[in-house]
Picture 1 (tube, helix red, strand yellow):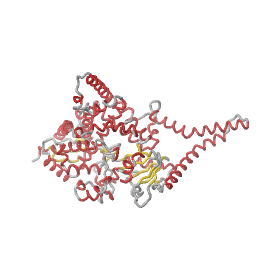
Picture 2 (cartoon, one colour):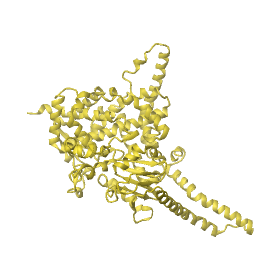
Picture 3 (tube, helix red, strand yellow):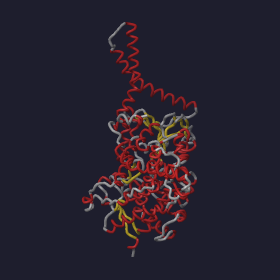
Picture 4 (cartoon, helix red, strand yellow):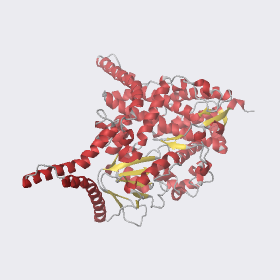
Length: 603
């Protein structure tokens, strides 16, 4: 595996070395054997140029033969099972290099879902693409995703290539492991997410109050606030507090000013520890999110240096002392319990996830990987959901007012919401579900087959689809959530009422797997209800404190404005006021700059 080599040599160099061994070693063996035979038969001592030329030509010939045999074997195996291969998407250049560059370009500069996804309907909602001769299936079909994630779960895993790409950040944590190791991590973490933990509203309230105070200070002075930045700090502080018991306190740092704000040039300063940690964690994720999109050749883009190494040093410098302290605290507590001086129940009150994990293992590497995995999951997907929720409340004042009315009716203008309050608020749940449908925070994912198997054909009248062993299959929950045949003719438009009116039974109840923002099957998100509660809590608090929200479009940087060609496009693309982007999770490019009116200023 490439990750085994990174400690000794740069990623690109180790990749090329591996390729040379794979493709040129047979040619060198051919040269040596041929020359030895030539020497033995003819007594020749000089190298024969013809042997060297033949050996070099054997490299592309061998590659072509392997590709031909792979494709022939797939067709033969499919036929033997009464299955078919999916439609194939071919480009114009060798290795489909034109498709690869187009996909990468459109991912960085286009709208959500552009690239390999926007021809899915034309190709039957599943297809295969060979990028640099590495075959990948793409799908946005619910029945196929059900097979991948649930009914045929044992046949699919993260896979070695994905694990290598993510290893420098996620290590061998729950989101980057398979088989027995994944089961170990899952079993280790699951018990912590009980109702008492997921409804930790006092923790949410502390950090929500800090966030709202910071926002009010800026609004009172007439400044716009990058709400995405505030929310990211809120979820980071909540996550580090909840998971590690050591809040990073990012909300204590000053908020940024818009690029056109007169105060902006006066705020240049050295980053605090919290800012360094948050920035480093985000940069590390950006690095690893780009790797799978460059296919198996991603190390060539990091030829001399693992680009995640520098930010991860900062992350590890923050996390490592906390891990060591937790391990030492647990060992001391164990000694006290053995001596009879401490009750086991005493340590359960206020127990963090890390406290829970050290009861199971004191291996620093395991603890580091698991806490980083859960921290990333707990911070970014929730931040994305909240960011786009506020964005859509700004664009839809009627939704804002209706939701605020429900908050005042069910909770009141000042009271802290409870778990039962949140559970009863139907319109709040509808708004959050519509955000998760419309701007799914984790829009794309991938699995790899560990054995040849078949998939349901999106065309129910056609044979099942064969997928060979060691084949990647990428799927987009976001694009599935936008299918008109699943969600109706208005699928490309934001409308929370679809979760309350006749469309709920017609579409979702009839086929629940068309909505999977938290995954399904054995890998379903353990923190699903925790995320719902955290999003609900902050939205309620914001609606209690502010009577209106509006985007400050002038605060957007020039490169953060939707391109003119988006205007007039069908659906939300034609209505966008910001540029949605994605690394692992969604975010708003350039921030979400908003102004709000305090509730006490109403007349």
